[in-house]
Image (tube, rainbow, N blue to C red; front, side, top):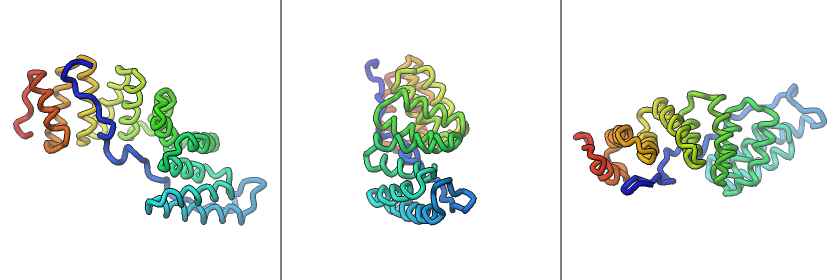
Length: 235
């Protein structure tokens, strides 16, 4: 890292990036009952899933884990219940325990973007950047226009050390969500650390224009001065 270069701040990210929402609830139907599982178990699992979603949204993550566990026990082939349990475990700081549930959900429904995204985030929380990168790459393939996926992919690639690929992902995230100030800050920092200082300065200026009162604003202005670039007069 060169002298004066801004270092990324792990907490600098929009709230949507830190936790994806629970998927919409679906009501099981008799035709969806797996072989060997009674219809009563499936509907009991749905009741537990509803209770789990309510607890999760209400901030009672421990209760959500309990309810989602019950839902999975009642209907072990319900990919949505498996994914929800995984998310609740991640929120509880039990990411390593969550991964097998995401694996099972993906094994049942491999084409669902959120399952890959949530597993990738769990790996990222564990700092397993290889697995996180692979997961976000697949999520981005399934949902290429999702800016949150692109941003998380960029951060995982950068943490893994693949800076050229990270720059491409940051650029796409900023293109998909041009008004997201933090995206321009992270993209600028990655460009700066890669020696692309003129391009970095442009991203820093965009960041300041979008969020002139940000906590990082003074550091960004100082870095622009070091680069010989004046901040925008609007900042």
